[in-house]
Length: 248
Image (cartoon, rainbow, N blue to C red; front, side, top):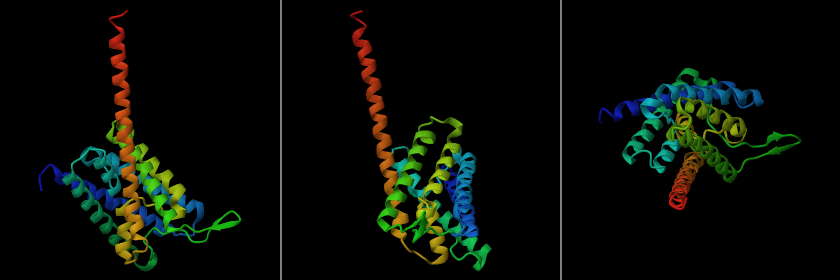
């Protein structure tokens, strides 16, 4: 392992470890029956943690802390394959380590350890709602799409400057406020896998591990396509001005 990649992998491990320990820990302590106030607490716990560690490690590794984000950055051509694989391995190990420590700390007090699950008979007004695996896949993919779009448009493209972690943390918070009651809203394979390994419960694992990756790739393709269109537009505008100059 080179000296250049080692700090990045360590930063990704620590950031993801902290994200799972604090985020999943808040979900485990608050529990599933806390209603909107509980979801709000869980959303801000995740959002603030991502924001804090993105500020802390953004200049070291980019502060991905999510395999879906890493896949999105890779698909957008902003990192190498070998580096992306190292990131993902570090993130998954960090997520599992965070969940295992959470289990050791909480013991039997919170059996779910913040593990995401699809809603069943969720009360919505006068009716109830059950999220099918197909609908859950779409929700998780969309939430990852939103997050990766913001990451690529701020941190990677450099448009938000030093405020990129704030935009990313806010997006994470808003995503969980919307999807927390529906799917648990991890939209992060490391965040989902950690509690699954710690509890031995792998229900809908395929959904939580693959949907965010699909959303991330779509976000990267759209980001790249829009960037090319913008470059072509600027080139056309420049050539038009040059063509008009001799005639003036």
